[in-house]
Every structure is written in C-alpha cells, then in structure tokens.
Image 1 (tube, rainbow, N blue to C red):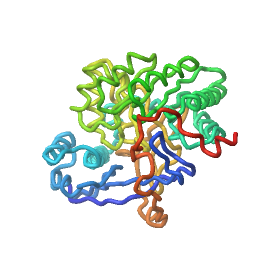
Image 2: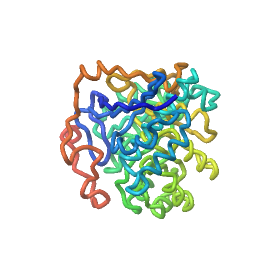
Image 3: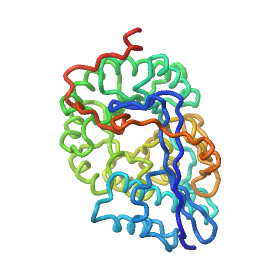
Image 4: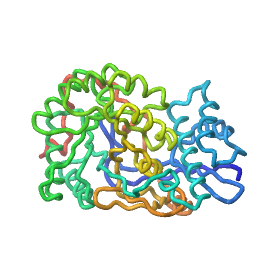
Length: 389
C-alpha cells in the first residue's frame, strides 16, 4: 500500500450560541473546521481534522510511502520541517496527517483504532466543556443541563476575568450537576486561557477556593512559563493543567522538570502519535493525561490504550457540518463504535451545500490575545445582559 495524494476542505462547527474564552468570543458560534483526507493506491482514504498550513511541504515527507509505518512517518514529517520550525499550524498539519495515517492503518486492518492500539474498554471518561464565557447565567444552566442528561458529572468553565462572576457561574453549574446526579458531588474546573500573571492567578483561585473545590485550573499563566506554573501549583489547592498549546515533546520536559504541571494535556489537532508520546512521558513521572479538542476522536481511541488517562474534553454534543462519528455519549463517557479506523465519515456534498463560513474579523475571537491580557487592574465592565440582571 502506498500514499498517493491528499485533499483538503473546510467545514464549520455550528454551536448555535456564542463560544469563546477570556481572550474573545465567536459571537455567532460558527467555528471553522479544516479537514485533510489522505488517499492510497488501494482505495483506502484516511481522515484527519486539522490545519492545512504548508501541507505541500509536509506531505512531501510521506508521499509514496506505506501509510502503515505511521510513527516513522511522523518523525519524517518533523524532520521535513525542523529548519523553519514545526510549531503552530504546521504542527497541526503534521498532526492531521498523522491522524489520517492511523485511520488508514486501522481501516486496512479492519479494526476500530482503539482495538488496534491495544485498548480494552471502548468507554472513555468525559467532562463537559462549553466554551461558555459568552453565555448568560440562564444559557449556562441550560447548556450544562444538556450535558448532565448524558450523565456527565464533571465540568470545565471558561473564566479568569471576574472572580465574582466565575464563582457565581461555578456554583450554578455545581447545582445543575449535583441535582442531575441526585446529590453526588461533581468535579469542577476553571480554564483561564493564559490570561493571568502569576500573582493574579494565585489570588483569583484562592478566592474561589474559599467557597468551591476546584479539581484543576487550566493554563493560569503563559504556556511556556515553567516557573510561573509551578508557583501557581504551589500556591493553590487545585491542580494545574496545561499542555494543549505545546507543540513538541521537547516543550513538556522543562515544565515537568519544574513541577509546573499536574494534569498533562494535549490538543486533538496535534495528532495521535504526539499524544501517545506525551502520555508515555507523563506516565514516567506519575502524571495523568487529558486530551483537549472540539472533535477529539483520534485521541479518544488513543486514550483507551494509555494507563494514565483521566478524562477527555467533551465540548459540543453535535459534530461539525458534514461530519459523522461512530461514537455516542452515555453515562458520562464517550463510547467508541466498531467501525474500522477512526469511525469518522465525511459528506463532502453536505459540506459544499452548506457553504457556511465563519464571520471573523482581524482582531476577533478567542484566537487573538487581547492587548491588555495579564495587565488588568479591575474586572471588565459587565455586558448589557449582565448589567440588566
């Protein structure tokens, strides 16, 4: 079997509500989802969700190769880009291609990827994550009530701008999950998306911890700040989670050495091989891992095979337009199906018919760091909807 070519397309994820974090919000809830499809001479096509940046250059490392040699091809892609650097979207392109190759390998074997990777249990524990900073209290309650109906008893909220608002929202979600679970205590997390300084992070989290027990605080300071993350971890009771924006195994080593990470994360877009290697590194230091992503299907399969997986992020309960997934959400877990490969199918006609594009301006959305991030003396003024409550 040989790799013969690739195709790219972009669909959208339609949330039907605002989504975002402390850095910004997509007001219309329409988020782009790039897709890569890798073709072979035996008619098997693999699918990966992720960027297309510099794909011609990256693809040159694997063209004509046997796709079943996935991990060696992953290293070839890293070597292909080492001079200019394999960070950011380029690392995402490598990850998307890597995911597509794993999909091909499992499809060729006639097995779901979780089985091929050595997983024993198809159920992957989940926590709810609504990208919810733009929601009113009423919308927040409704969103997490929908998660609770699927048995989820753990939730991660977006916050970091206003400690009083964060506390109120955490208490609302705690009540929703507790009621749904007939009084059982839920697990709560807060994601600040790198919006604090070290002292701000410790002060903010300590204030919250006077009232609510936090399982972890995510990305309290900049992703590379090993000393700062370690200081936050020492200064609060909650664990510190980070890693979703780190691109390359070498970026995890200084954080782990500094005691700067308690929950090791990787993003779905960075690929399966990356996740497996980071998981092994974390396991060597007795640290748990937790995948991140809107559609983390590849990492869900991989999570079944690593001994230190703790929980995976469940964002929207619906897949992107034109994308179908062989999985369900039951009793607080993703349940993977038996379709060969990843269990993902792409309806290119449906994507073309939708012809929906996200409306993003140059300085808009959560992917653009605000000019005053980490330099706010006071909480932002409340929105009109909040002021009217």
